[in-house]
Length: 562
Image 1 (cartoon, helix red, strand yellow):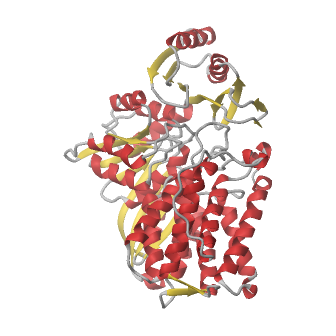
Image 2 (spheres, rainbow, N blue to C red):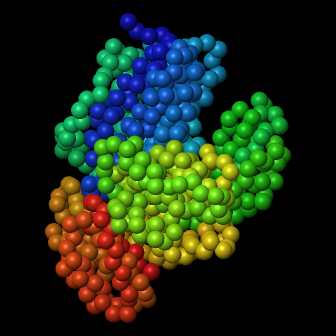
Image 3 (cartoon, rainbow, N blue to C red):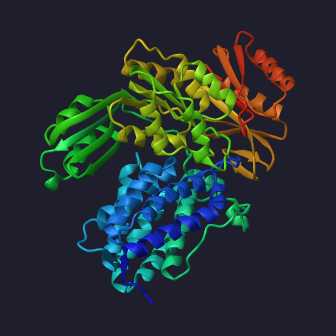
């Protein structure tokens, strides 16, 4: 029997089935990584985000789809992990935004189509400089397709079938939209994960209710699948506007407020713009060189409740960490070590994995370690708890991974009572180097600017191993090779680890280099480390080399060059 409407109970079944279908297949999506390294995480991030939302709706007894979609939206927001999870949470926030406009407990075909349109629109608004060829394109073109064919769709099943078919068509063409994907001959993993959710939702409509299965090996079934990669690790972001400006305004007339009245002038003043309204509250995040002008504009619409302004020019790069089967448990141990202290001027939060790396960060003054990395990105809620625990007027967060930056920034928007600066560090090496320049006697803005300058002037790289054959950036890579990565590019590939780290160092070290810090991973013998130190001396005998037993998995070497 075809469904003409979606009730709250049916919507619960649909999103739960979608989440379970993704969870049962998330290892396959994890394999679709932009680099051929054993640290894929898109599927994990998306399924954990979805399961966080499903947990909330399952606990609620309401049969109204308005209530269910609202609770789902909040649960996804708090559980969002990584860029893909944040985008997914914003998609469903847009779905709720449209559903909230109806006057009864279910939605019609037309209303559901509009909710899908609202989902893609909200997802685009949440991302700085939206990039086509990613999950964003998949959700947009799918919604546009069902909107175009609306008059021919006579059931909810029809809507999702057309939506799903377009999503698959768009996924296939993502390499044509994003040059780096075309170079590697691959597609976007975020879009692939989203398709799993929609497939599960359609299954629920057709009466196929799934249960959580024991995870399979994640082996892909076709040669084409082996080439899939995600787009979440692509390239450098050129941040042209120096001040990260965030504020909350209590609106004078929230019922008639039009976001475009503030969005349009702010778009002319900067980038990284996020404008969100929650009834009488307006939340704004923007990178601009004119924070004062932005605040003056905001005062036209209401009373400013909170303000945070900091220098945010940061580059970011990926680093991986150790995978864990029980991420919730993994966070309990670091949390239990933190005892809430009296209010202080500064609190520093860093993301890290590897006991040696964690200890090195603590020795440099980090107050709170959020356990995580590329393979297991922490959720928004973990950062919110960390901000509360450090109990400081000013909080600096070092994500140390580009795929964690959005989550940390989202947490900073949701936290009140502290000025939170998210330094856009994208490697452990960048975070470690930035910490060395931290000065508790100066202002948050001065610290942010100083740490930014240090990170901008340093170089970093990692050595790991390949999990498939490929060619990227002109470098031929064979399955099992060691590969050296810097600035989101594969610099070298070799069957010998010492050769790989040597060639990577050759690209990073020059006559002006003064200090090199090397985090040594598990399984690397001291004899090899000694050879690495000797090689550095052959390039620059005056360069000081510090080695730290990082005890990290997957990445044999993490290198910082100053």
